[in-house]
Amino acid sequence: MQIDASSVSGDLLSRFRQGDIDAFETLFRLHQRAVFGWILRIVRSPATAEELTVETFWRIYRAHARLDPTRGFEGWARRIATHAALDYLRTQRPETELPIDLPAPARGDPAVAEEIRRKTAMALGRLPLKLRVAAILAVVEERPQKEVAEALGISVGAVKLRVFRALRLLRKDLAAQGIMP
Amino acid sequence: MNTHDQAPIKQLLQQALPPVDEHAEPASDLWPAVLRKIDAGMAAPPWLDWALVAGLGVCAAAFPAWIPVLLYYL
Image (cartoon, rainbow over all chains, first blue to last red; front, side, top):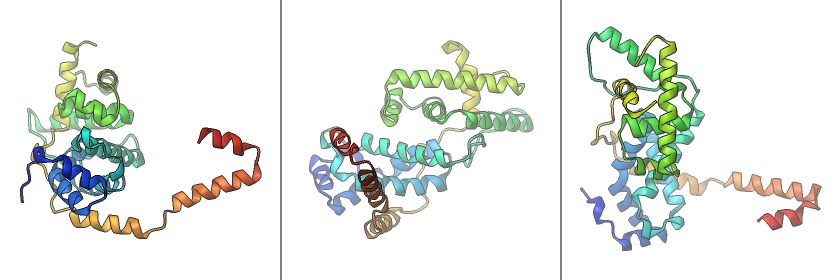
């Protein structure tokens, strides 16, 4: 059944806030895809994104009493999803290439393009986590900075600063490897 | 580095990591897994909570002078 996310009523949120499992399932059906997509943007692996989507909705259910119905569900869920994804990434070994389970468009010489792509992904993986996630969401995914700020729990100015620092570090890293963007 | 300087590195990033499809969705319905996790969470003892309480108890027994300080910050 397709449910329109914009039709979430205050009553539904109130029932969820009181721990109503049916209301929770309705909210899950409404937001499952959006939460999965958001996490996938951060972790870049569909299988991991599925696991973290389950983890996110579990956290959401546990925190049901803390939902502020006047502020809506989507932003709150996105923030919890971001925290779940960050917690996962913190457990991963740093300085490894980001998983690229998603298809990339072919451009120019495939061998050269693949090498540059690999080195760029490696450089991105070496960035501090906070900078990396801000760069992925704001630059790669081109999400609105306000949305990224809300998800990360920081100001728009802080998002801009993180993206700026991320790009500067990336440029230096790539230049050291002979890639001059 | 100004906005103009950022354009090439942004393009490189987008080539390295293709943006996620707007319509991406899980391969299967995740609701049963969520329910299983909720059930497992309810059945499992909240060991972290108990460990925290035990730790506080040990600290209170070892350093009773800290109790007023702890209560103040709680």
